[in-house]
Amino acid sequence: MMRRSGVTANAAKKAPKRPFRFSPKTREKITAVANLAARYYLDNGRDFPWRHERDGFRLAVAEILLQKTRAESVVSVYTRIIEVYPDAIALAGADPREIEELLRPLGLSRKRSIQLVGMAGGVVRLGFDVFDDWQKMLEHLPGIGAYGARAIACFGRGQKIGIVDANVARILRRVFRIANGDVRAPIYQRYADAIGVAGPDARATNFGLLDVGAGVCTPVPHCGSCPLEPQCPRFGTKALAGLTRGSF
Ligand code: SF4
Image 1 (cartoon, helix red, strand yellow):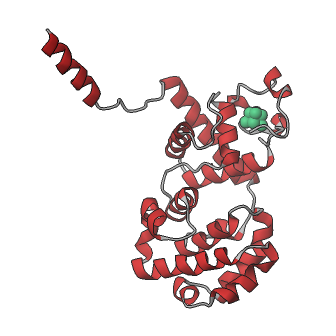
Image 2 (tube, rainbow, N blue to C red):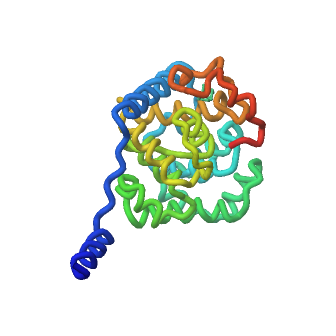
Image 3 (cartoon, rainbow, N blue to C red):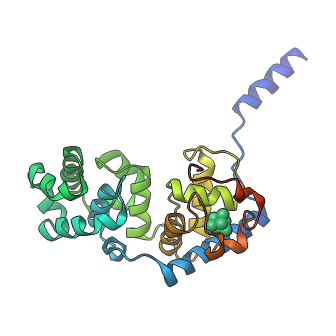
């Protein structure tokens, strides 16, 4: 008897975790959100030069520049860098001090210029296929974090994956009533990935979510003009009244 209970305990320890599954109702909602976000992007999306790109290297330049900066202020610097260094070979051979000069309007540090040159060097070494695999990018390309690697894989290669920044996490939290307030919690990536898979065009869906997060579902949300309102239980509820600028 004792032995049997020991075996049972060991078996329980080794039992593989059941894969996370959404209920059919949640899956339906995930699909609806993916479609509404994509539609919003196609009708109202912000236009940035990197959004027309499929070239992994150029998207990587944009992702490095976009960290902790406003997208609108990155446009002229990004355009200039791509003019002077149109491909990875050109940027890999650059002197970081020259890049630093180009980054000056954004107030970016020398570290960012070293990351740009290092990223280009990584692409030259590993080949352009590195952009097929977001985990490989994360491992080998300096300055590219998990968010950037996933964004490049989606925007450059059309991979159906989700990307989560603080703005997107805020939308997910409100629309799907996620209780965990930690933006790094895996639950956010799970929802974002499911949304990326659910829509017909993950690029448009992710661009749409980024734009809703940046301009509509802000800390104090503009629910009256929100494309996701039909799917959001927060709309018109008292819960919104309690949100302040500091709210996640
Ligand atoms: S309806 Fe309001 S709370 Fe819901 S996603 Fe839109 S802006 Fe955010």
